[in-house]
Amino acid sequence: MKYNFDEIIDRKGTNALNTDGFREYIFHASPSMKFPYADDEFIRMWVADMEFATPPEVIQAIKERADKRIFGYTKVFDPEYYLTFCAWTQHYYNWTFPREHLVTSPGIIPALYELVEYICKPDEKILIVTPSYAYFKYAAERHNIELVCSDLVQEDGYYTIDYDDFEAKAKDEKVSLCIFCNPHNPTGRVWSEAELKKVGQICLKNNLWIISDEIHCDLLRGGRVHTPLAKLFPESDRIITCMAPSKTFNMAGLMFSNVIIPNEDLRNKWKNRHYDIENPLSIAAAQAAYAHGSEWLSQLKVYLDGNFKFMQEYLALHLPKAVFRISEATYLAWVNVGAYVTNDVDLPLYFANHAGVLLEGGNMFVANSDGYIRLNLACPRVTLAEGLKRICDLLNKGD
Image 1 (cartoon, helix red, strand yellow):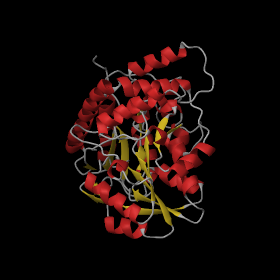
Image 2 (cartoon, rainbow, N blue to C red):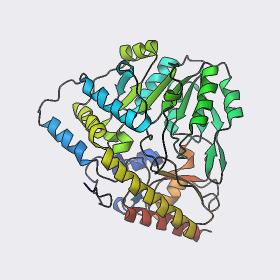
Image 3 (tube, rainbow, N blue to C red):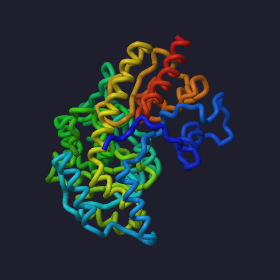
Image 4 (cartoon, one colour):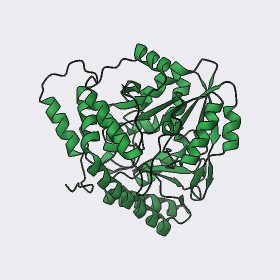
């Protein structure tokens, strides 16, 4: 069937973080915070969920499970879920893993918080590359673990790893864990096999555990291929892989993710301490997504490719000093607008107050991110066009 990604869906009255929670999340303010724009007037390009309807195949599976009429304590007992998810990873990544390695979590963020506790001792350190998804930092802070950052190198919007710096920091005997984002958020890099091998070799040579956050692995630009980090090191049991249907199929609120833990001792620690009851609707939804979501995903990726191309052309015409490169993965655009604003400007507040656009600024991505904004392009093109117009009009006004 043909899916409609141009549909405008009203999310009011659904307790959506996107519509109702931006004051607290972006601005750390109360619901009484006032703006020159009414809430309905904002163009929302911030939090990483989509303005697209979840696939009808997933919605149908939820309805069918709801018709069973009982929602008691539930876990993933049926092997069909593992078989369905493994068929997905085999098809898209030519990679599978034993059933006993798979555990589930309400989300990758909760899994990160747990895994850091299980892996790291109080005086140890965690290594990340920056800019970085902020929750990598928060996971360290939650357990009072020191964070060590290795800045990525950027040239004309293209990011690479500074291996000398990364290795020097991995050699610190107190660094016991690397949290690595593959594909990378916020830059959108799809790391090549060569890059992943080098990262893995450095970490494993220095006895680091690796948590590979691969939540964006399905959301690739046309022609790109994702490689799970663990696939390249089949003999190692120190790489934990985190994947989820949440970003791929716009079902983050169902709170369900896959965590692949090959190390038996760590997995037993997880099982002994993790409360592994799951939402029965979430299990049904995830299995349906992996079983029946391929065509929807294929059409989504074509639409997203179009949105990125539209943005590239729009910025080239209307904001030529911005540094932007089409993301190789994710539905998130990472844009340097530093030529138009000074570093002391609170970018999310600036665009909210003066353009009516909700977005995330570089300050939300740990380090190595001054002057950047991150825009969510998983929206109808008419919404994207209006958001870009407002952003460009404001920045050109101050130019």
